[in-house]
Image (cartoon, rainbow, N blue to C red; front, side):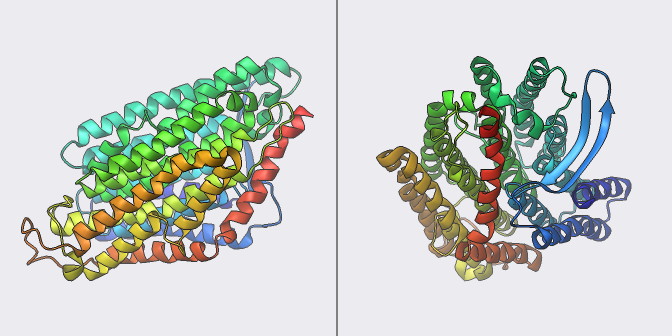
Length: 510
């Protein structure tokens, strides 16, 4: 079945067509909407056709690409419960970003084309089951995002785009070296087996690799992935990239690209190298807690709304890493036992943050487009001038701070629950972020939505958000509420798949 290949190939075809077209806004945006809308429809079909009782990969495809006497590289893709929410999130956010960017006029054919290429690359990362293809898709994402920041960004776009590319590309090279280390170690221990870069085949035996090898390679993979999340102290590229990226780029970056890093830890690093994960368990925990508190505390000091949301993403992705740390704490590398609840919670938190942060960055973008500034001290009384935007923005803020009935509450409560199961009363330290997060969001709402006019901005000519701005936010908010009320709809398939996927690690060690 070619379902996944179509979801990857269609955005690539759209990218090529848009680059071949003239810069014609009406035609370009309709083309982009078509080639991002069809993958969304296919992902909706996937949600319906998915066998939720089957914990393994579904919709699989496997084609040999390069085969020699020394190595074999195959195009192999599939979706299980771990990848399912990420695939849906990717297609949904990509389509909504195209709609939100409906009025982008500058080199619009290239802009929409770059958005589609980012979608294709991210979709490939979340669906591939081959290390080498994983790296190719990983690198594909970097180039269009670099140009999105460089060409359509704001004042410091050259600096921010270059910093983004250097950080993420350098870390991905370390990741590639780690992949090759796994590949060669696999074939040195099992020389009679066929040459392969298969993630599943190598991870089924890699827990048997020497402990020192696992520790070294895990460190390389972990570094490559946490730079992308990002995690303190490798986070400094993120606020700059978000601040200077156009709104559509910021949404794609926060909702999708950051999830690639944490997905890599869940899918590759921990199950393939249990001794390495266990050896660095306290490093994972400490980095997670520092990122949570640091990101929240720095957000308190921001005047730029977009920079505040960017730093809050560091805090919320720290929660993802905290859930992973809680799972790793239960890991017995000798038997392969692990309580996969933490893995499931991390994946669900990724999905929740991807939905919520899209609303937040879209809100900041609308404020910038209409008021001409994101300086929260210069704003005030937006509810009186832009009531639709104010409603959407407040919903996004409440979802991000953990309002019950929204997906953020279900996800963060689950993170704190698995943290308590693993670390007990040490939960008191990371849970302080709840107070800090509520503080900077409520403060932001008071200053921008309900505060008095500062007099710094001329509100006389400001009008409320356009249809193509508020409709994507409304769709996201409805989904946020739906999964907040019924989180098990997405959490259950994640949990079933995680238990099955990690059982291969235990099977290798029996």
